[in-house]
Length: 488
Image 1 (cartoon, helix red, strand yellow):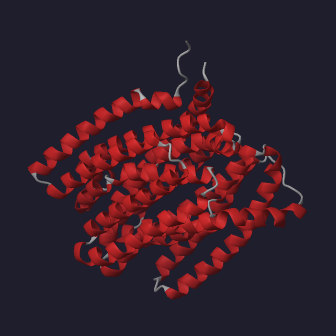
Image 2 (spheres, rainbow, N blue to C red):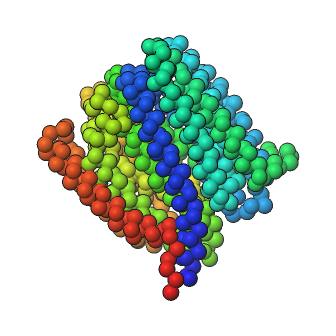
Image 3 (cartoon, helix red, strand yellow):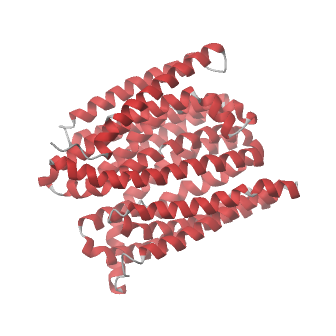
């Protein structure tokens, strides 16, 4: 068996486990969305989306992509694990304190009703619990024990989905939707608390806290590596949610819902990329740090890129083709206006996949400072286009602004990476093919809006192409990444 076999065999186990965990997330996420859309209706669901967007926009400033850096450093030198985790905990405590202060200050600038203010602080509390849990997942992720990640995800989703599933029963006993609205955030808080307890118990098997004298030193070293990456992720996160802010300011809560539901569907699809890249990232970090292992790095990088570019295009075609059916099943008839938004945003799926991989490649090579350029380009372009298009076109305008900003971010990240590695001809070719096919899909979306016969025919054609391509991908490219090559 050649050198590729050992790499891909290890990636096979990790990716398979992570894939199962992410499929659980996708399935439960869609079920939760189905329940909330029908229970809260477009207006209250828009308020739910707004509160969520406000909190998630500031998440990167607290997280600073700390888990990514920890996994990279622990993968390279596991003897420093205790000190690194201890420093991360201290740094996280400082950042969380600043987050709470900022949340209180932000509350004073927003005109929230008592209902929204209660939900807002419950969401802040949930975010704090989630941030702590991410630190304690680093030790077993760095040691490539992905089965524990699947366990923590399963526990969280069982509690979360179980609680949300009880909301329709609450509707039978009370017509007060406001109580149910607050209950949504309370259930999320409980689920994060249970997940934190499980993650802590698992993580305690892999590390012991370093001596306190190491904490400040390691916290400072970690912050030096993380702050620019956290700023870049903040810009990216804000770009993801600036559409919601403009829709809330210039339109109505219902318009927020018509954009948020298809946007969340598309972001759920990114879980496939997260699964594959998460499995490959520890290997990319080790191989990228050692010039003598460049060939192994290239094998892992090219295989991952090839799979994600092709699978992203295929999945985007499937989502675009079946968008009317997906919206009706997930959100219900009252969200039919969001079908066109989903068809537009489906173009972003391959772009999202490659943006996620590009960010992790640059981080693995310790060039995370370059991420700020792509993130800034995405944020600026999305803000300007939203300001111009949202007042006139509503959710449709927000959708096209999102497509353009994601595409611009990919161009910037790709240009920066190719400047670092001018021999990456294989992935450049796949990137060009992805760009051409995405342009064809975008043209089809522009020429066939609405729910007419021509639009349905185009949707079905695109869906058939997507299903066929997915079959080829999972038969060939996925085998190359996730399965041991046959022995000769």
